[in-house]
Amino acid sequence: MHVRYRPDAPAQPRWNAPTRVQTIVRPIVEAALPPVPAPEPAPVTGRRRRDRHRRRRSPLWARLAVTFGTVVLMLSVGALAGAHVLIGEATKNITQDNLLGDGSKSAAEGGDSVEGAIDMLLLGVDVRQSWEENNTRADTIVILHVPATHDQAFLISVPRDMLAEIPAFEKNGFPGATAKVNDAFYYGAQNGGDWAGGAQLMAETLKEATGIGFDGAAIIDFGGFKNVIDALGGVRMCVDEETVSHHMVMIDGEQMFKTDARRSGRRWAAEPVVYEPGCQEMNGTQALDFSRQRYSLSDGDYGRQRHQQQMIKAIVRKATDGGIATNPLQVNSLIHAAGAAFTLDTGGIPIADFIFALKGVAAGDLLTLNTNGGRFNPVTIDGTEYEQLSELSVRMFSAVREDRLIDFVIENPEVVSRS
Image (cartoon, rainbow, N blue to C red):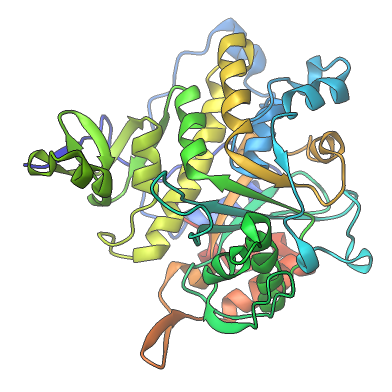
């Protein structure tokens, strides 16, 4: 018997409210998508009639969700008083470390400033209680690009199996290797490098591979991230094809990792977990498990990238539309959950300055992009299969580096993810 999470509405491609850029990009991309019936319009009340032409401004902590993939702050821009002090209070539990090393932007590249384009490296790692903390690879690798106009944000997922030249790392004596890019985190974390060393070696590897230097970075612990989603009261996810969990089973109504199920002595009672196509509310365990699957998907890791991007957008949407900022109890839970969820590096720039530099980015301004147009581009070396960057992806990363990604997306809409 399978435990199936069934939808409560048909899955549909969805765009957030259009922004200055999306009014140009959206028609080009949607022309390639199948037609979707327009939903019935909701009644317009007097309050909505006054507000419907206003651009929805994300709460300040929701803009950090756009930036770091999690929710940490509670205040709207219009109601801030003593903002820097309050931001400092809300972010004091966040661990800060040097996560960039030589992968940071140089002064010539615009480093040590938030005046120009901003590029962040987001790394998702999975560590369970039974694992050695540094015995992990970066399951999720995302580059966040905010152009110098600071009115748009792009998430670019990097394939974890991408062929990469991982440089030597003096911090722990690693000699360098040709390997999959997600191995960079593992090699950097060994022999005393810890997670900071893993992130530094990943940043340096990606800078060599793409030419992009970073202004900041965040390591997101999936275990802590689950608590952030639960503090939000869950998120709405749309499953685009039947997805069988490779990692978890259901035993007596409890969803648990297969390794934990074996140790529990109740393995005989385990039922497979299957996510059915359609839209549904998911708690933290379900959303994270669904977004980590690739083996049962028709497009493998690219499907997983799409679902991870969808999860980040779902968190931002829930934070923006759910009235969270006006609920002190939920705000307090979110701050504590987020503080345990990630390690942050803002490149020496105070967090408050970093946040205010992004005040023009609203939740609807987040556009998700795929490398290789979301299609496999494999190469086999010594019996190991890798993903290699296509010529289109090489040009996309050049556009990021030169801060002309908006024009590139308009000219190449196939890079836009259908998340």
